[in-house]
Length: 137
Image (cartoon, rainbow, N blue to C red):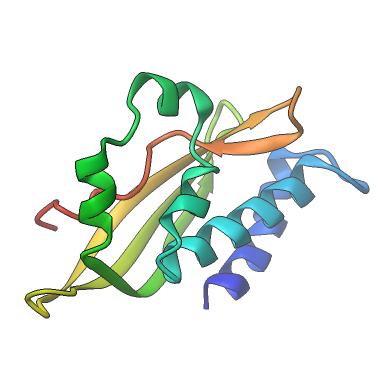
């Protein structure tokens, strides 16, 4: 489902992106597809590479936080709302179903992702950080 949402979203994102080969829209589609897949398949290290380098530097994940991610089993990643913000950033509201591997507790989280384009790197960065699986909602 995430792949279909990403492809559909690429059309919406074109309003904020240039057209043609190697464009912001293509970079966005590729990045969202890769990030969504990484979260869905619990590859948090791969997902972390999409996090804004400034955020990774100012707020790196601790060893404790990395260990906590090992307790989570994501079972669904669904984009609920997507929009282009006034500053050409992309915002997505995502629902994530997950299970705690130890307690088998299942719950759904709703998280916000904001993406910014980096002209120099020709890529998009997620500026919110990895989902906080410890939140109550």
